[in-house]
Length: 57
Ligand SMILES: [Zn+2]
Image (cartoon, rainbow, N blue to C red; front, side, top):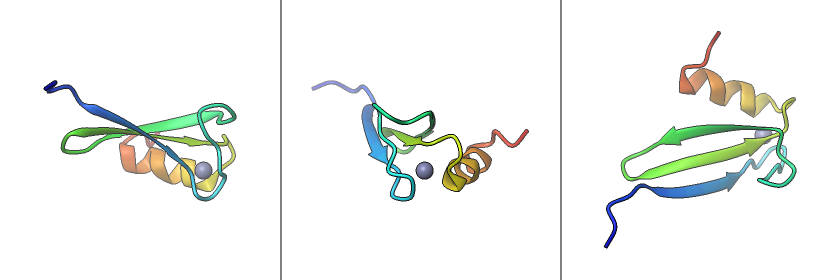
């Protein structure tokens, strides 16, 4: 059994961007899982995710 972080890729429910057509992504680490969410660069959820992740500037 590996102790490495699991990596989970999510599609944004708003802009429906994914690894192949997304232009931007946010990454957040939870307990044992690294979550990558893809967005269009104009997606308002991307802006919100950046603020939540601490990339406010
Ligand atoms: Zn999005």
